[in-house]
Image (cartoon, rainbow, N blue to C red; front, top):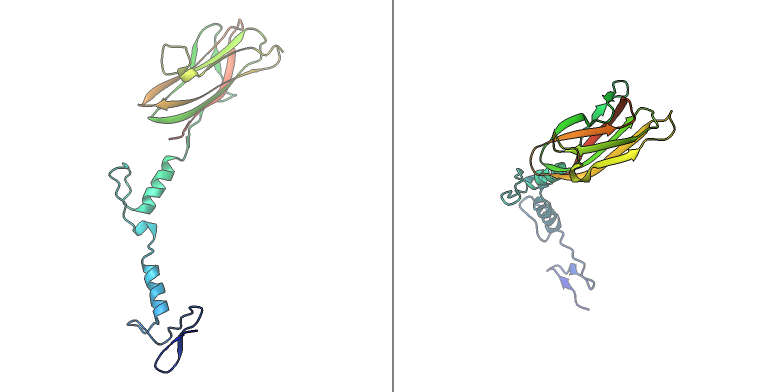
Length: 198
């Protein structure tokens, strides 16, 4: 079994490959070779914020890796906006006519839209709800419309909901419209929530 020793006979490498470098090699500060190598290893493992990032292709504004990661994460953090009609300040919806109960602007992006509204108790007729990008249209944008019959118990409210995912390619004006034919004016309250996904 061969070994390597220094001039004094001190064992440097044993049969299983263990290395004793104490006092054999030092850097300018007197550190032995193992410590010196560890220091070099630490020096070539910089923080992500110190690593430059070329942003030309991605379109990101970040110029270092940490900022690029943070920017990507922020772009995928949902932004939620509520448009509410409070129960103590309801909207009056006349019989058998389309009424715009809310409108707002959506900027470019992908959105999950959920709208839920509650009509005052009345057992007659239907209730209709639509989200549209037309001030004059009444059909659902991306299929976001719903029509259902009123709850048959005269003392119970009727809840109606629309849901959809839309890809807004440019700033778009959105209208929330409703209709009912109970035979009388009904109060309505609720909210619509566009959540920007990307």
